[in-house]
Image (tube, rainbow, N blue to C red; front, side, top):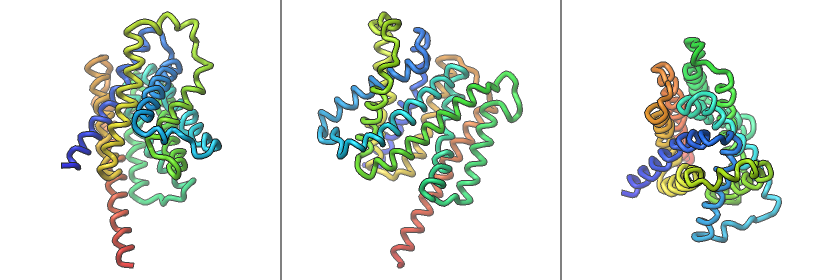
Amino acid sequence: MLVNKAFIYILIGAALWGTIGFYVKNLYTYGFTPMEVVTLRVWTSAFILVLYLLCTTPRSLKLHKITDIKYFIGTGVFSIVFFNYCMFTAIEISSIPVATALLYTGPTFVTIFSYFLFKEPLTRIKIIALFITLFGTSLVVGLIPFDKEAFKLGSMIFGIGSAVGYALYSIFSKYALRKYTSLTITTFTFLTAAIALTPFFPYKEKAGLLIELEVLLYAFGLGLLPTAVAYIIYTHGLNQTEASKASILTTVEPVVATLIGIFIFQEAFSFIQMLGMAAIIAAVIIVQVYNKRDNHIADNQKIRA
């Protein structure tokens, strides 16, 4: 029963992540730029997450060492700010489905970075998954077959940039996990990002917009549902199941994002692009399934030894 509940939590969390584009596109209609939307997201998220930890585990808001801030500069500035800016720009240039599909090439970059930084083996399955991802990406952006109308260099660059930023979060947080819980890392990540972006937000120009009810609802909604609530629910489910299974279940995110883009914003997404997204998702699932199998074999070998 616990496993079923865990799956439900993970699916809900991933589905909420898939709604990010809904809030972003609506905030664009009020004249906010991608970086301004990033600022709104990190500030509302930081506020909600800090409040949540104060109510549940206030001790987790204490740094072990002041020098540990370097981890959160990595996850907050070099990952979250960069990743969100690239993703939101890709949404602005192209569409929610295309931007989300490109974001899901992130695990590919995690594999590459982990090979060079942590000496994790680049297995045959991982290499096959990399080529499947590359093929799927080519279909999504309109390179195979070449589609002059669908192909936009800017969306590809920013979409891949969001994937790199997404991958960097996994890399930086791997160091932070030696000392902190995943929820604490996420909270400090958004708090650091919020503080870093504060001086650059055009308060004078946007002050009138920030008091409009709909803008506040979209901004608060962006920080609440697809960020704070999604992460808390996902983490709760993750604590009750295997990480590999959770990663597979999170592939519901691009599905939800695609449906929102197509049916709410009437964004074009061809059958070829859908095949590309399916290939990218398949690559993620393949790696997770084989990682689970390899870990099971390794555990059995340890038992025999």
